[in-house]
Length: 94
Image (cartoon, rainbow, N blue to C red):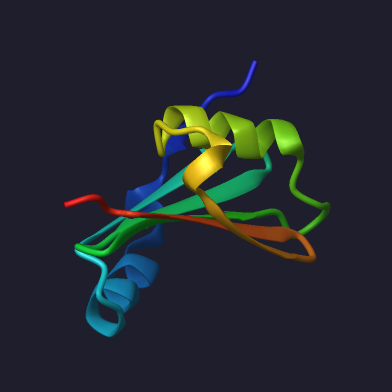
């Protein structure tokens, strides 16, 4: 069973840097087992980055994040894949 653990307080430098240098108005960092999940939001979009330095991101992890963080399905999500990292982005509806 997968479980998200909020580890934002352990990544204060990352949070401060992102808030200062991007248009994000919030940053949250979670542990999903060996995968780090970084969530951010702005007035234009909600973005989630899944990062695992030792292996590729699993589809089950992507689906878990879609359901439990973004509260959406795959239909309106933009995906960017790279080795060991996946970025999910959905536009914010007015």
